[in-house]
Length: 474
Image (tube, rainbow, N blue to C red):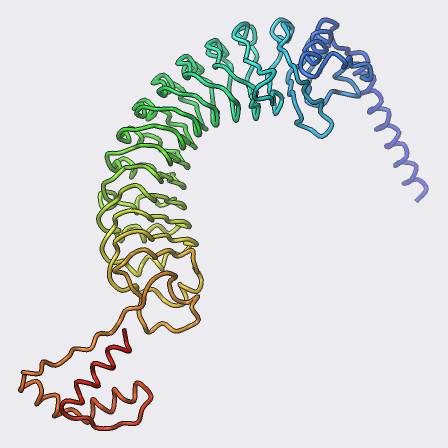
């Protein structure tokens, strides 16, 4: 036992010596002086001249690194590889009210791979900041990620020389005050995998050159003021997984080339002005899991597509898209479907009870259409779905009166179907004779149904009784 304990102590001392040796390595691998001075100057430009890094030892990449700054060794010296400005971490340095991009950012950092600004330029009116329009090309040999997130005080246009950052893999300009047209030369960034320009005030058309971003995985231009048709060149983005162009002013027909996006899992085009019907090329989106086209005057019908081909589809939102015609039964073959919204259209016809048999469905909205006939879904289905089954505002749709309370087990906002009683014509002696012939049995059944003892009613009182019964059943 004593021998075993001694071995553990020896191993611990060796490990401790190795750890100390590692720290010694850090001591003998200082940051190049010009690199350190450039870093301090750049940080002071964003957080204020009060900061001087005096509490950092032995340097910003040593034992007390700056939060948001990452370094790497090149030829035995530390160099900055990532700079994240803003409150990314709890102990990050906050940005000053007046910030500036100082020249060393472009002149010194030759190994910079990632640069981001989060919630740094926050003023709407005072001290607004624009992205420098020059010198970005000096970072073209190293920069792989450039992000500006949640900076409402960041205004102006995207610098055209962003197109010179040929090693860029991620360009994110999210929730800023940027405006103007999208530079066409962004389409030259052949290595780009993520392009997010959402929630700004960009206008104009989507450049056709964006179709050259063949490695793009995520493409998000949502919540802007973009207009015009979709360029057919977007069909060349064969690696694309997510396409979000929602909440813009885009218009025209949906191009058939969109069927070339074989790997697409999310397609979100809601809140635009697309028209011309659903393109049949949607059937080729075999990997699609979410399709959201709501609030577009698309028009057309659902019968033109074989929906069963979209076997991976989990969410389908075609609400308020001007659809007409019937709901095809092939929709009920989408076994992964969890959410279906066809509300606020002009759909007609009967509902297939097979829709209730979708194994994963958790929400089904068909309200605000012209559907007709009797709903033939089970009480169990209504009870499970509650108001997540929307069938209201279909004036000629009803449910069977065989369904019993509680109210949660009947479809909300749908009227019960009435069983109509056929009245006899007073001048039809033949029908009257037939009725009188079976009077005893019919009277017993009908009176028993309203909780009264069975009595025989003849002649004129028979018609009075039928009128009263019909009146109470309405």
